[in-house]
Image 1: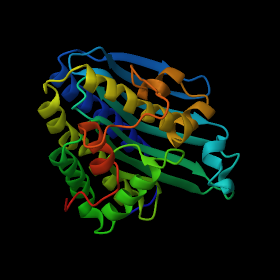
Image 2 (image 1 turned 180 degrees about the horizontal axis):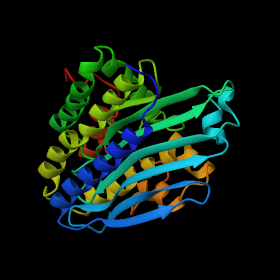
Image 3 (image 1 turned 60 degrees about the horizontal axis):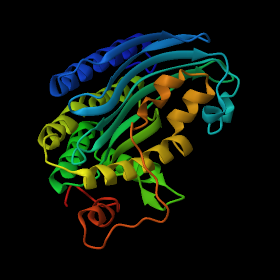
Length: 304
């Protein structure tokens, strides 16, 4: 098999994946997603699909982008200085869904492909991606199902991948200034090119294609759970952690902003209603405290 990247195949799959996910989410929510096609002056463009004030989804977006540039932005060149100053292209699908119901978790998924050349003008490429779950009122069955689906998506490509990528997710989606996980984890990988292109692409496809199986049953199960102002208040407080991570640590957000990306599309991951409090702590033994004791600590959810 060849290791030369087939960018046309990747782009076609990403666009089909975006359409398939949006169609499934529209069926659950009952409200159509906005379609916003855009072009980037420096090269490339994308399609943003967004819903706000839906019946189930308070705010959510499923974005496709394919952009090019003449010189790597600092966020990418920092960990690959050998590629600095080289032309590049990046494509991917990125989504964040913030349901209205506090018992339905927020979810993030991203699959992406990056290519450039080295100093000898030889092709350099890698895949990245993953998905992670951010509950407010955790449910053990939901989190276990999500992790099991992630495991099953990676299993055909190597027995060690899930353990590696789960650990990577735990370490990546971690708010160092809070010493606290953003959510209940999932899988994450980046700069993946340790096998040939066809195998790396197939693995990334498996991850992207597993998203609906991982998340839709949870959303459908929790979207009609009764809740009140207390639950909405805690949801808004915990959404603050999501904002902090995305603006301080997230490589995708930093890459998009530094590369002159479309701000509206990059920041579509922001939740619509957020609260911060000074030195707030949940009451011991409360449902809110259970998030901190039972779901944020890193653990093996396959055996939980």
